[in-house]
Image (cartoon, rainbow, N blue to C red; front, side, top):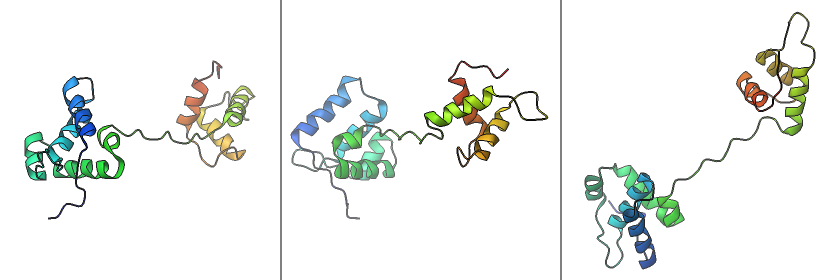
Length: 151
C-alpha cells in the first residue's frame, strides 16, 4: 500500500525530536510520537521503517502511526508531537445573565415554595428567556462561584 503522508525530517527537526526523547521532561505521549517520527523518517540518513515494524517496536497501533504521520505532514513537528487542547465550551450565561441568576436566587421564591431550588432557578431562566436551555448543575456551578447563600 502506498503511503499518502511521507515523513521527511529536516536536520533541526531531527535534533529537536531526539532531545524530546532523551531529556526526560516531555510527556510520555510526546516522547512516543517523537520516536514514531524518528523511526518513520524517510529523508536521507533516516531509518525509514515501515509502519508494521514501528508498530511492533513501539507497541502502538497502525492507526497511531498513520495519525502521527498525517499530523506531521499537515501541521509540522509541534502539531504531531504535542497534545492539542480542546477549546473551552461556550458559556451558557454571560456576566449579565449570571447577575440576573443571582438576583433571582436572592429574590422571594415562587408561590408554594419555601426557597429556590436549582431546578426552579434553571426553569425560571428559561422562562425569562435568558437562555434556551440550562441544567440545574450549570446553575449550581455559577452560584458556587459567588459567596451568596440561598438559605
